[in-house]
Image 1 (cartoon, helix red, strand yellow):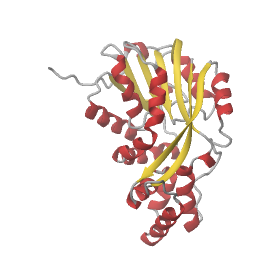
Image 2 (cartoon, helix red, strand yellow):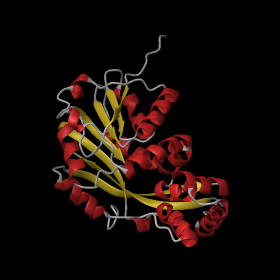
Image 3 (cartoon, helix red, strand yellow):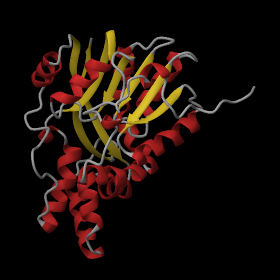
Length: 294
């Protein structure tokens, strides 16, 4: 059987009316950070995926993708969540895998090639200002993107969805309920007094009720919303250290700037602060808020 090459472009229905001024632009330090993280996330994809796959499966199950539909994934990272949808769309449907990071999309392309996903287009998009036509997608899936960082992302989702379209999304609950965020940060701070969080904390006060209100406030009808407990698990100290020193965004960058002696101190503190589960593995739990809206 002849093989096909995935289309790296954009479906005609979404390509119409694109405003070139809305194409993603440099967002400063945050953009640079995620470009740096992209290659690291691709290399450690399985470590990240194992802990959060249940969230993706919840979203995909509620989405109920159908053959011939166009589904947009926002902040796709290495794309694994969207790829769970691709098979249901059939050869006439399209998965639009998008991220604002070149490096993340490179990882997603590589993963699609490994899985043999062909009905996919890769787009560099910023959720604040989607460079897509009005009412050009049937469903949007967003897992741990910045969908609630303000009014713009949800308004943009509403704009690009066709009438009757669905939104499934997952966001993290407030930071204090996510040890995978707080423990690496605390380990670093214990050694060098560093603090990952600067500026406004987007997760401050994040709750089930708050997410419901934000989604409903953008004009959606919330059909289902709940919390899911998740956990990143690490069988060895090396895996735990790789998570903190390679994948934890600003914490990882700060660790990379330390000398070997200080890094060793942070590593020891990380192991001391990280709880273990019944199997003896290190376990850093968290709470995701997931929802389905129309």
